[in-house]
Amino acid sequence: MAFSEFEQKRYEKIIGTYIESRRPKPSLRKKLDISYRISGQSIEIFEIRPDWKDPSIVNEHPIAKSTYIKTSQCWKIYWMRADLKWYSYEPNTHVKTLDEFIHILDSDEYGCFWG
Image 1 (tube, one colour):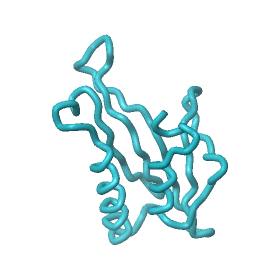
Image 2 (image 1 turned 135 degrees about the vertical axis):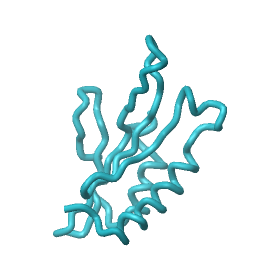
Image 3 (image 1 turned 90 degrees about the vertical axis):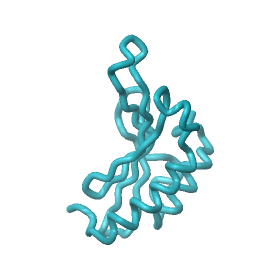
C-alpha cells in the first residue's frame, strides 16, 4: 500500500531537503548526481552517472533504501552490497522516524552508503 498524499508530500520535503544538501555543484551534475524515488512504502536513494563507455547512457546506482513498516510503525534501513541485493543495515536495522534514517545515512559510520 502506498503512502497517503499527505505522507508522500511530507516525505518528499524531508528527503528532498537532504538530497539537495548532498548534491554536487551544478557544474558537476552531468557527471555525478544523486536523487531519490518513492515507491510504495519505500524511499530509495541512488547515484546518477553516465556510463563510462557511452556517456549517452545514464546509470543509476542504489545507495540506500528505507521501507516503512506500518504494523510496527518503524522504518527499516537497507544498503546494497556488491552482489546487488539489499541487506538490513547493522547495527541499526530500523528507526522510528525518517529523520533518524537520514541521520544514519548522513553519518555513514560503517561506510556502507557513501563509501
